[in-house]
Image (cartoon, one colour):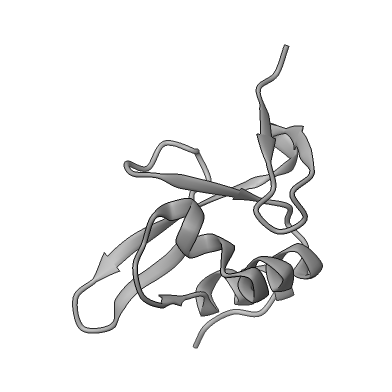
Length: 90
């Protein structure tokens, strides 16, 4: 039986394999940035998200990433947004 996780965007429960795990990484000059944890093995608290723009936008609107990751202040979500939209950062 595969583990079940909850998407921070739509709040639907589903299998772990159908979600992306994101973690907050510390970047000294710019603060914290959200990164995708491909192997689900990076240290720290993680949040789970469907790989869709709709769930991403809902999570940003609800400020769900900060609550789920227990991070105070703002998070840079541009890396995650670019990955979901299929664009590459220059």
